[in-house]
Amino acid sequence: MNILKRFWREEDAIGVVEIILILVILIALVLIFKSQIGDIVTKAFKSANKDAGSIIG
Image 1: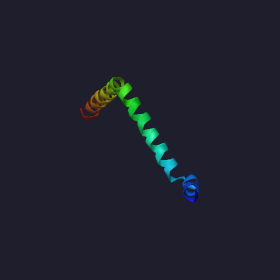
Image 2: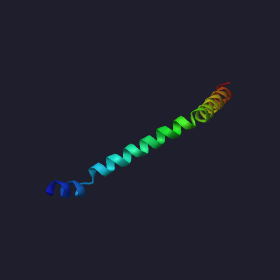
Image 3: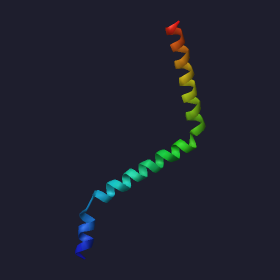
Image 4: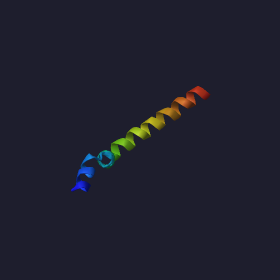
Protein backbone atom coordinates (compact mmCIF):
# COMPACT_ATOMS: atom_id res chain seq x y z
CA MET A 1 0.00 0.00 0.00
CA ASN A 2 2.90 2.32 0.74
CA ILE A 3 4.22 1.82 -2.79
CA LEU A 4 0.89 2.92 -4.27
CA LYS A 5 0.86 6.07 -2.14
CA ARG A 6 4.40 6.99 -3.24
CA PHE A 7 3.53 6.28 -6.87
CA TRP A 8 0.41 8.48 -6.64
CA ARG A 9 2.43 11.38 -5.17
CA GLU A 10 5.17 11.05 -7.78
CA GLU A 11 4.51 13.47 -10.65
CA ASP A 12 7.49 12.76 -12.93
CA ALA A 13 5.59 10.09 -14.83
CA ILE A 14 2.77 12.50 -15.57
CA GLY A 15 5.19 14.89 -17.29
CA VAL A 16 6.54 12.08 -19.46
CA VAL A 17 3.04 11.05 -20.51
CA GLU A 18 2.17 14.64 -21.41
CA ILE A 19 5.30 15.00 -23.55
CA ILE A 20 4.59 11.71 -25.34
CA LEU A 21 0.99 12.77 -26.05
CA ILE A 22 2.13 16.11 -27.43
CA LEU A 23 4.65 14.37 -29.70
CA VAL A 24 2.03 11.92 -30.94
CA ILE A 25 -0.35 14.77 -31.76
CA LEU A 26 2.38 16.73 -33.57
CA ILE A 27 3.41 13.68 -35.62
CA ALA A 28 -0.22 13.00 -36.52
CA LEU A 29 -0.70 16.62 -37.66
CA VAL A 30 2.44 16.46 -39.79
CA LEU A 31 1.27 13.23 -41.41
CA ILE A 32 -2.21 14.62 -42.06
CA PHE A 33 -0.98 17.91 -43.55
CA LYS A 34 2.20 16.57 -45.17
CA SER A 35 1.43 17.75 -48.69
CA GLN A 36 0.30 21.20 -47.58
CA ILE A 37 3.42 21.64 -45.45
CA GLY A 38 5.55 20.53 -48.41
CA ASP A 39 3.88 23.09 -50.68
CA ILE A 40 4.45 25.90 -48.18
CA VAL A 41 8.12 25.00 -47.75
CA THR A 42 8.64 24.74 -51.51
CA LYS A 43 7.04 28.14 -52.10
CA ALA A 44 9.12 29.69 -49.31
CA PHE A 45 12.38 28.38 -50.79
CA LYS A 46 11.42 29.48 -54.30
CA SER A 47 10.61 32.94 -53.00
CA ALA A 48 13.85 33.10 -51.02
CA ASN A 49 15.89 32.04 -54.08
CA LYS A 50 14.13 34.61 -56.27
CA ASP A 51 14.65 37.39 -53.73
CA ALA A 52 18.29 36.40 -53.21
CA GLY A 53 18.81 36.58 -56.96
CA SER A 54 17.44 40.10 -57.10
CA ILE A 55 19.76 41.21 -54.27
CA ILE A 56 22.88 39.71 -55.86
CA GLY A 57 22.39 41.00 -59.31
